[in-house]
Image 1: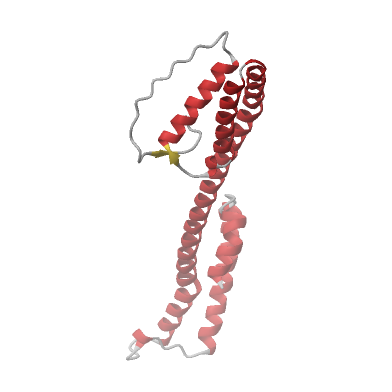
Image 2 (image 1 turned 180 degrees about the horizontal axis):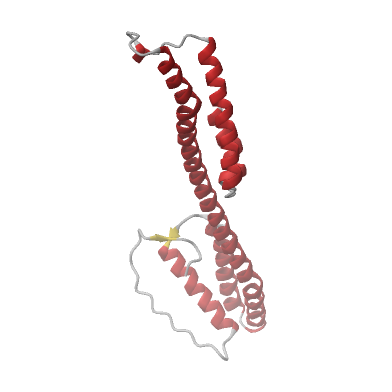
Amino acid sequence: MYAYLSMYYLLPRYILKGKYIQLISILTVLSVAVLYLSYLMSTSIEIRLAFDIPLARESVVRRIDFVVSNGLVYPLSVSGFAICIKMLKNRYLEQRQNEWLLKQKVNKEIKILKAQIHPRFLFQSLEAIRKEAQYRYKESARLLIKLSEMLSYILYESEDENVSLNKELEIVEDYLMLESECNKKVLSVTINNSYKETNVTIPPLLL
């Protein structure tokens, strides 16, 4: 009774909120009540504990031992141990909750960044392809293929936890190529990629 009362009433209402004066007052009242209950039990029942055999101790001594142990020592010690376990459990659950919230925050930020990439880039790319289509049909078709590959990667493949680094570099090159087509007059792009490893993976859209 004492342990459950401490874990589910005293701990959340007083210990965690720092209301120590009220806590001490309640513990004093409870201790007095439990001591009195133990005293009533000791007077109505002949208490014979295992370490009283043979009955070498006086009955008064046994009664005092029973009252103090069961009315004060055991309730406080067991309740203190239970509260420590409960607080450690709460700490662990809080840490897990914080980790989950942090992961959700990162995922949301990534989705926001993806959403920022789509509209401006898509509009500029389509505008460049439209201009190319007026003069060079083959070039516009090549740009459309590159754009469709990039959009497929951003919308679908980027949901994976990791992707091939080569694939990420390929998408970056396509992105730079499309940007250069959109800004021919002000942007000059030179790409030199000599990376050959095939088994390295990274989070998508990191680069």
